[in-house]
Length: 371
Ligand SMILES: Nc1ncnc2c1ncn2[C@@H]1O[C@H](COP(=O)(O)OP(=O)(O)OP(=O)(O)O)[C@@H](O)[C@H]1O
Ligand SMILES: C[C@@](O)(CCO)CC(=O)[O-]
Ligand SMILES: [Mg+2]
Image (tube, rainbow, N blue to C red; front, top):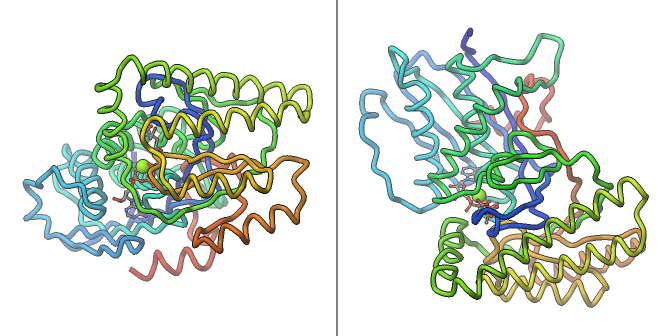
């Protein structure tokens, strides 16, 4: 396949409705792609240098290709993980090439970094798609007249598997749900590596809140594992219960989509959110700021749970057809007063895309061209 000289790629972040952490231990998770995306520009350079610009984490690095031999592993700080995931994918994807190509790569995201919305997966999906396309391992799907395009199923599987390897560097022991949503988008059920797109889902209104409490998915995933090892007879039933929550949620959503959504359906969804939030606290991934957030929204009659790895980061709040616009406005205002960021999001966005430069917004192209 012909390798490309330049490409623009994006992948969405995600929100997990139910099943975070339990999914790492083989249980069901339900996840949905967000309308917040990570964007990447790759240029093949004539110089013998590879450079990566990551303005979200204030990281700008350039290597002489002759120096790229052994790269140390084992770091857990933000920059090292992002850079190692890039270098690992770059060196592996081009391992069979006669020469390593000089490249200039810039990645910028609308997603908050490390806040539970799958920023690491959106990053590794973009990096994998760009490098595999630059190598010519997968096609460049964009034709002249198109604004954006997706790869074939088989090519998406390859992107997803490389993104999973990148997630391993950033997460340690990822389940694969985040990179699956970043690759395929939409609304997915994920169970022990099996990805099932959910076709029967109602339109849901979700409020996303970022507590702005920093946390690391890698540390939280290993904390849950330690707790399971320490108290298996206590924790295994908790994981089973989360699994049941995901399954009941899936059935309820399907019923809502086929029969029409009733107040009873929404009441079930709210109960499941409350139950799962308690379970996540039991797993040890809660945070005082998340408890405050849940209490505050409940005072307005709205139900919330953390989303993603927890320990801070983001929560989702379900809005129902009964939720008045003034309630939404008041909740957002109260949450902002606590120093949280809060916005209504749209869900079910497309997975990884290749874009023509003219189809990107002015602000995205400006950032990608700047570095
Ligand atoms: N736009 C970006 N630029 C550079 N690095 C990024 C970017 N987005 C994510 N990363 C990398 O991913 C890490 C954050 O990943 P982490 O898994 O901890 O959080 P998350 O993916 O946002 O949340 P979750 O895994 O709970 O959904 C950062 O420390 C950084 O290494
Ligand atoms: C906490 C976790 O379940 C979701 C992070 O978004 C980790 C994973 O599934 O890899
Ligand atoms: Mg992550």
